[in-house]
Length: 134
Image (cartoon, rainbow, N blue to C red):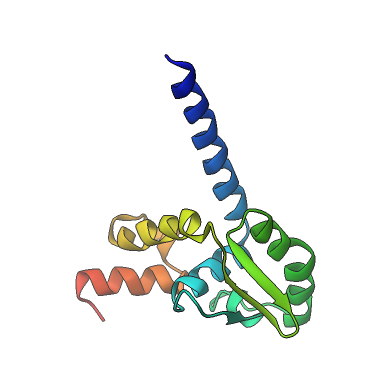
């Protein structure tokens, strides 16, 4: 193994760790999906773009969590940029690193176990679209 391969391997591992940590909370996952559904140069309103449709939450509590936890984490990794007045988010310079994970998951919804699909509106829609069922 060369030093270059070792260093590249370490960096790839760190990149995956950052992505999985960023995706470890539902509001962050939902925000990434909302941004995928929006043209690259547009922002999305918050907190509503970070709410999973099948899992409603108190908007004020979510707003505080977004402001103090979720948005800073995503922004620190350059996945998003955000503004406070009004509270919005848009794609950051490294958005493609995290967006591609969801694109891959969505394209494989038909092959995923029901325990990961049923109850997730987006994956259910993707599965139905790929099987032709409505």
